[in-house]
Image (cartoon, rainbow, N blue to C red):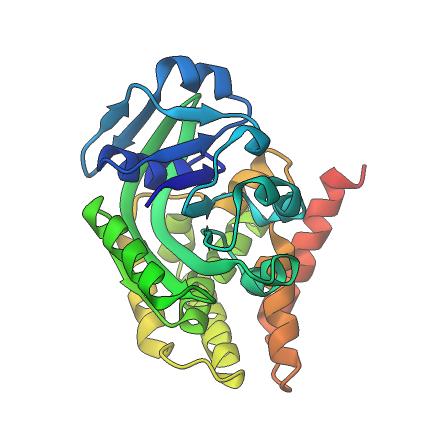
Length: 304
């Protein structure tokens, strides 16, 4: 299958780069570093083995791109209002779009815009950052859970095979379970690193904030259970704490957005999840307070 990467940053550059290194045809959409990457290629510094892609298919406009079998959308969800215009020239009735993004409700909203589109949720468990033009630094982990939202089974199976052939640990996880499992990590750590202006390791090294992180994780798990999601329980929270203990000190994507005064992914990471569980009579009070704090903090630099 052929691939297009929308958003060649820390995530898209890594997964797209791995697929290209494995011999798949991969087209990369770039913005600020388009000219640099077109001339110099893409460098992936990785804990699993670094590599350089000398010549890549680089584009700066989807209207100039051919249709691919699979599109990996790796934009921040704050840019999803651009997807209708960006995806329309490169999709047809056979296209599969993988939303490698954070949050709840992303697939439902995209399906409303593109009723016939094949959609898959991609939940990346990875520490990776873009450190320069065409330069990705992959620090640890790198697996991805894939949840089938509306993709034919045969195409979904081919997608899993391609990721595994590229050396990516890709796991087929039921859609809702996949989305909410990622939320178990994202909702506590993204917001807490912002409101306390810190990193993941410091949150877990302090007994008070370590307990608060765990309590927030359990709110997510109980909220998921309230709307009927299975496969997410206390043992998963324990696993996420253990994995984060073993991580290098890390600033999640929302913390980086805050540091650079960019819009934060509050809507899909917090508001949508809180709203969904409230519909069935369950509340997540600590996470609702965290959401309010994030909106206040963001207003200080975006509403000026």
